Image (cartoon, rainbow, N blue to C red; front, side, top):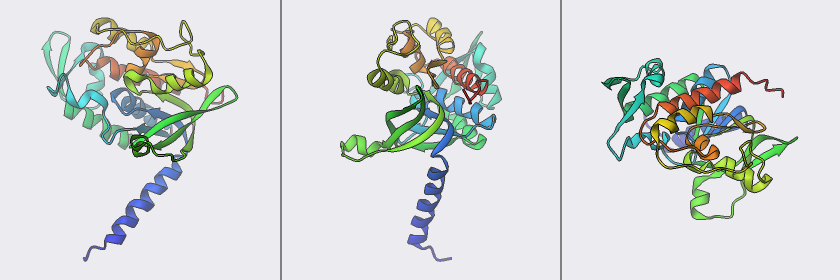
Length: 260
């Protein structure tokens, strides 16, 4: 068979456009394709929710690829090991309660499983604003990352979502937009983003699951964004909390009446 260049281009444009149009309205839009966002997407998709995961970078996976300081190993504690087992990710016990996994295997497996469960990834897209109607978030204003990088004056597009998950990491990007546009109305002690605290793995790992919850009508927070919003410590290259955080926020959305 002789390959035709135009057919190749046509296939990419048509199939991507079909997906993009199909996901202009979703049950859940997740901002940030790090481990927490991917795990949340996996469990939501398994529960038959229509899920779009938006990632501003070319690669998805957040900081997990690099493990700790570019040593591509991660640690997961006993409490979260069942998620590694569910995804069939290899790990070995280093000391009692500490399990080591290959970071590349872990994140690539999470990505594959989430995709196969039905979550749809859109990389190289960033969120520049939120859509609010009837005092609740019901969509996102999106653009290409290249537009942001080049500082081009290009108007964005909008997608609708019943729920939004801010899994954007340390910057808590969606929560920051809410504060900027709607004032100090987050469901925190001050209504503002409290700010991430210094490293303390034991405390940070416990807090991240507790902080993975709704922070504004129909806006949830997961992963390091959760600790940033609620003023909890960072925890470094131990990822059990990230995995548990994604699962926890998915369960809360699944158990929420989406007609509220």
